[in-house]
Image (tube, rainbow, N blue to C red):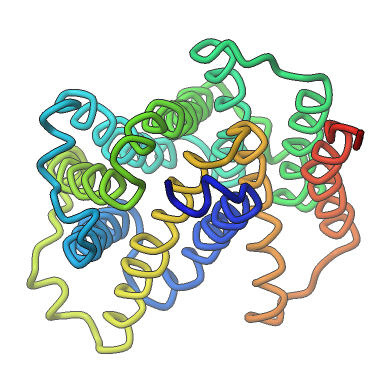
Length: 309
């Protein structure tokens, strides 16, 4: 049994580091000069390759074919669901909805985890989780729009984009729930490597067909050295390492709903990184929003903590 199964605080810490990886992706993306669907393709193809290499270096994870003998179709479906479909509809949603609308909608992943956990595992959603989740989403909307909540309101043409972003959130949440028993059987590194690699290849094909954007090796050769360096950081830090910690941590935490609530901190971390790295100003509205989100996430933990006997 892995150490984070024995010590739950390590599992939650792994999830938090994974969230930090999600939040810092945009900063390296700007510096890489690669954006949109092409960025996601390179991220998961190269990041998935990194995970495969890591798995091959570890004796316990080296046999990548064993999981296919017992979970062939499950692995194929989860790879397509969590990476290929999830990130395809994410980029597609930006063609119809605004960035604040998509960003706010995607951060509802923990709510879909809670609902999925209720349906699949019959795990009830406590009052603290409901209140905390709703307050966190409200705080995130306030943070992303800087108080101008009218930015989230849109016409009927935006509705389709919001539904697509919601589909992305639901796909990632469902993947996180359904992959847990397979991770428990074969280990986080092996299953993360398989699903990220297969999902990345599927994303490469679908992005090429849907957006006519084909990520080819020549593109990497043509990138400036600095841009290629930042792209590799996205692939190996923001994907190989932090996706492994995110997926493995969620599979190991005792309460996956609570663990997924740490994802609400993603825009908070991104905002603080913008202040620290880019020297951006922070408004009182954003500070209030950060306080609301943090209070929602950590307040849920305190409210549901069992009293000591």
